[in-house]
Image (tube, rainbow over all chains, first blue to last red; front, side, top):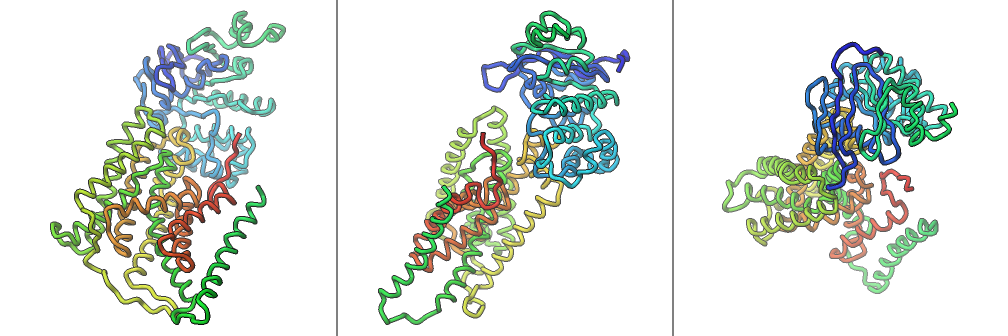
Length: 246
Length: 332
């Protein structure tokens, strides 16, 4: 989606955060998501990609730095308030309620607006037709790929303006990975700004308008997705030498 | 380990069947007159159900607290004691207002709920915000338990007490067994309260939120649920139920300064037996614990009844490690 001149929808500025006192995982990294943009965050294991998503969303306490949503500071606001303000989040693992059915999972996504369930579920099932056929199935009995679809559908129920995806392709077969990326592109095409943290750097950068490369909790490189794909340093460090051949 | 599934229950069954035979033969031909074994068994079963549902009322809160914040609340017994002694103060204490037991019980339950809320807001929420580890918090619950128990000791004293109303009653005749109207009312009220809790968990929005937080805290937050508020509600429910259980237990037994502490092990046993973190499991597990404790008195001294209940816990866990209603979890 083209930039429309508006200010960024989400800005995280020099974030410092970590799980254990005294040990910072994020050491001053910054990101920015503009309206309708698809932004990828890649980096080696332990770079702090998932930690960044959690900290921005309010699941992990930020020690320094600020998060702004539509220009308003929301640093360390609780996650449920971020949902109310139009931010969706899909965790990497355990991202559905396995004991609940597909329908109940979607209803959980509408916890704050239960009356609008019928309207929103119809919209979301249009995007994920597989869910419509499985409304009564328990989420725990679905395949990894289907669960990922359900997890994204749940997060979309509240019509977020920004969607944070934490490694949506993790643990999926290449076929399902492609399906997930295609869905992410569709969601973004519908006007939802997406910040996608991904381990599969090459596939991520192929579909992202912009990408951030994190290393040890700091921004290492930033640029357009396709530029990063061909950046010598990024190839060397994160994509592997095979990427050069393509 | 498959042999345990057959061997351990078989051993227990053999023991239970053989011991009464042994004691009967030791008594020779002179069999004492009195209720038949079947009548005594029925009576023990009725007593066991009554004991079990009271444990269940107190254990549900313990289980919900564990389910939502993974805290093993060692001070839960004191919430039971405080409910009973506060109702005693309002109802039977010379220094109290001398209310009838029913309004006294209602106020005691409200006090228990408020105390639960105060403990969460004043202690656990700040500790959670500081990222205190679960083991540290568990140690804090032990300290809190000691503190509350001794506050009760100072205020209430060591003398056992009874409520003024419904103290001595004639049992209703149920054929071979009997139950006093008081005990029957307590049992039926307890069952109604447990059904009410189940309906709350299953049918209401806050109940759904409690189940969601128990299942996956981060995902519940990501669904827009205010987890801190849900935890507060769980403490309110847990505190209120513990106080109600205390009043009921004080009514059918006696009010003492350490009654909750004595019940605590049985509450834990009920929670673990039923399946950790499952509210329904806590109900079923507590019922089993209550019935086993009372039924054991058919064969063994009543002083040992809690020990048999805990043995039942060990046996069930050997056969079914996840508890009766617990979910098996994949490890590794």
